[in-house]
Length: 332
Image (cartoon, rainbow, N blue to C red):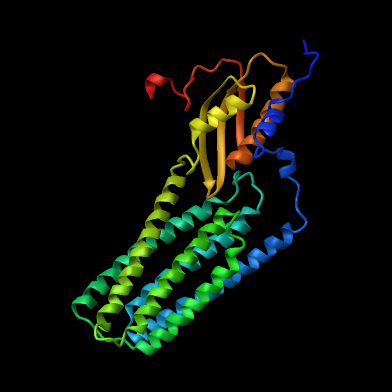
């Protein structure tokens, strides 16, 4: 029998107690400037790709002509930026394509494969340049400092321009933020190369260039290894970084009329595209109440955990697998 005094729904209580949990219906409303902002971001990405492609060509030619390993190393780093920007751009374009019967989650996984290839190539080429730098340290060679400085300065200015183009877009989009951090990192590497060029005519100049190249390579190896680890984690359908399943379970059980959450699994189809499945145990409730709670939980997952696609299976204490991951505790 319905209570004479209607009580707030779990979602209303959650909204009052936790302002960050918003109604999912409101999240679907488009903003007038959204299309313009998306177009501007696409344009800035293309400009950044063109700028960094020009840097790669200039630093590669300049490195060969001047004999500078530091320039060649920075060219490699900029090449990784071009790859990261391409990945970001095409991930946005492909991400707009609707799912199909053949690719029910869309084509976002292509971004992960491209990032995996990018990181593997970075590590291989870094090994080659490291070997050359160690040989150069043992047998130092003079470099053409003026040419090296000119090309390095052009690269630094172009990197700064690319950072400026993406700075305003790097806060709300993880995909763009990754490309933006690539550019910031490469800008710092360009500063190292410019400094090496300034001291190239110094007494120890022939040693500074290979040392600078090794410093840049260390940065590349660090970022390449992180990228390799993250992409491998996604391909293995690991739990998304920063997603605490125990805390998520407690949040649902505390804020909604759900007695238990189990058989909980979360993974990513692509970078930032989080998916989740779970069994939710309800008390004996009317179907309309269960449906409303499921809708509210969907909103909570989207607003609080950035999970836009969740498959929630309601049940009334019938599932034999009660563990968080769908297994009995003694099998964990």
